[in-house]
Length: 124
Image (cartoon, rainbow, N blue to C red):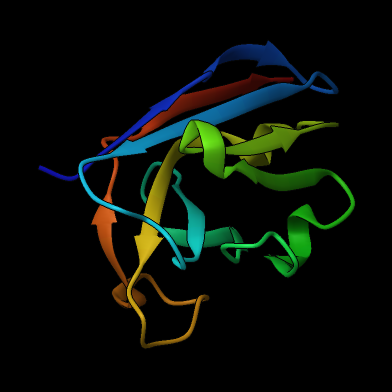
C-alpha cells in the first residue's frame, strides 16, 4: 500500500521557518518526481514546489521562490520543504504528492498519490 505521510507543520509567527517532511513508502519511487501543494481556507489547492528523482531539477511557484527550498533524500524515502520568512499568506494545509510519469509538474492531476496533509499556520 502506497503511503505518503507529511509532518513538521505547526503554528509560527511571521518571519519564522518550518521544515516539512514527507515519508513515502509502499512501492519503489525510483525515478518519480515529488511535489508539494497547499490549500488555504476557501481556496483551491495550488502547486508549491517539485523535485525530480535525482534532485537535479527543482521547480517553484513564484510566490515562494527564494524563501522555500525543496529537497529529497532517496535513501530515507523522504522529501523536504524548507520554508523560511513565512508570512500569513503561507497559511494552508500542505500536501506531499508523487507525480505520475506523464503530465506537467505544475498541475495536481499529474500526481497520483497524495499524503493526508499537514497544517501550517502563520500568525501576524
